[in-house]
Image (cartoon, rainbow, N blue to C red):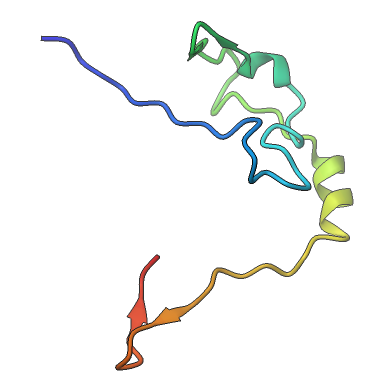
Length: 80
């Protein structure tokens, strides 16, 4: 039998407003899709080079966003 893997990504999707998924990554070319697949990353660790200067610059004006806290009628916490 074959093994199967599901891959989900949100590059270029409508809800990425203000910052795209790879905006803070230096090695964007490593994340290009070919035939619906990502090539294995070749860099050590997770294979991501973070553009730290861009992260710091963006964080200066970042909104103070929080996950919504939903509650049931009995005031217990409701999950997403």
